[in-house]
Image (cartoon, rainbow, N blue to C red):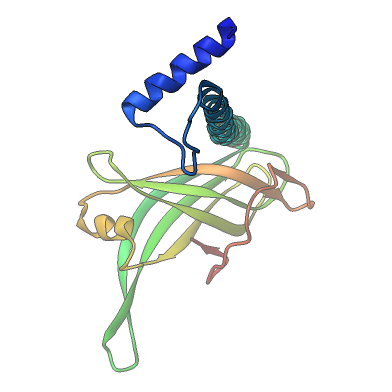
Length: 224
């Protein structure tokens, strides 16, 4: 018996002492049978280990792919946020919106019963350019008296403002009694409104934007 066979036989003997046998393993009547059984056992265990390693590698590959996908998503979001901030800054150099005041107005039906409410915002628009403006779009974030953010909502205003001109308009946002931000707005004694510009449309058909705005629905020319 060579050294390899002796090592294999010792493995078999140790396994038998522990009562570890394969299903269907034949009784070893001779040393040769014991070595054969142990060699078969070693092959099967190696195959199982290889399968486990394969499965673990596949799981790790999925995890790594998910991490890379998330990393790319974060990078894309950062690039998008940077681009949006640049557009907002560029528009602010040419156009300004100031909230002069707001009211929480009830709406009444023909029977005199209140059926809904609206937020009315008085806006002062200032066109600093020598080009006529047709409107603007973006986001509006509303804060309470403690500067806590209550909600962010899409906004689109279609209003003609002449070159180097100012204009006062009324923007209307229907009250959503199921919106957490709207609920908090009704409880705050004072609101602060901040605009984030995504697009400035000129009357000549040219826009200053990043081309990612959805077409929102609105009840009036100037509304949220």
